[in-house]
Image (cartoon, rainbow, N blue to C red):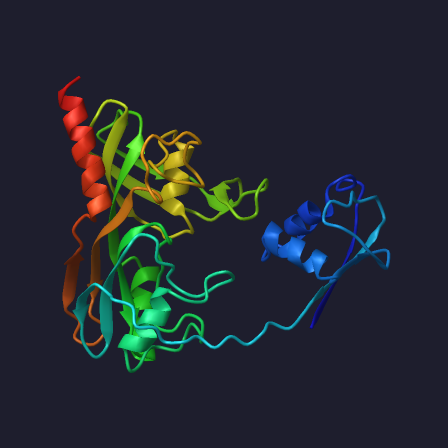
Length: 307
């Protein structure tokens, strides 16, 4: 059990309690903070309060963070699109809508649940919740990621990602006409000060670089190829929104009015290049565009021809 004690400053006086705590507790989202409050784990001047309590200068806020409950992740027989597999690694083409590893609200149906059923062994470096997971892609992003079957492979692959020896290329459809044929977005990314569940370009954020190239233009939409130089959370989605070209279908960083009935952002991890951790062989993997993405492109191509 962890105890966190805070004294409200004059600067923070008048804020909602959940907003205040989400700002002070960087590892917790506003929803997580609200649950702590509703479960009676937060008191103000020794009194239970509600999430919408307005803080006052000098108030003593006590947060009790209970010990995390042990979660047993169950293997599940879920079909996987395995692009490559050997005794050290597996390369998976993840479908849109699949969560990579279990987390609050998603303890079943994840890629990890499927991997536990399919693989006899997975690396344990990232713990019981994320066995084998070297890097992630968002739930509603489709495409390639590499899985480590043992700790040796995991360490080598992690070093490759850190040293930028591994590379990833994404494809996306964005709003409006991207005028430059090529470009680089270099803008620091950190937790959004207004919404702790979101990332944003912020002063003092972590260095982030995304390169893009225009593949096709359709008037009000553009088809892009993107290469990551860094791998920050939601990097491509945040960067494209930052330059005024959010990804079509993005429910978090996109436009409120969405013309197409997509289940998430039109973003696909199409190419993954790694050096095999055991053999030292350079390997490139490609994943074809999923059906939802092809349908969107065909519609936009046909529409632009008729303009």
